[in-house]
Length: 106
Image (tube, rainbow, N blue to C red):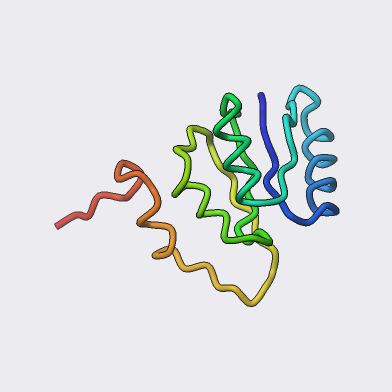
């Protein structure tokens, strides 16, 4: 399985990489990327990995801005550090494909 880590904190990225390798040495980490800008560039110029570990708050923007610039075709695990930034599901809803939303029952 191929994966990338999008995380602006070097220590956290290294720690996550070590944890992944302890769990399964067959997982290949293709890149550790620290910003929205670099993530967009990487995703536009490389085949998309099977899985992306994605920190929500990066130095240059919220990582959801990546989805405004490139169609991501990977499974995603969101990472969030304890901060003062609340995560409201409504912030994410408009950025997800329609088929991922739960159907309302009448």
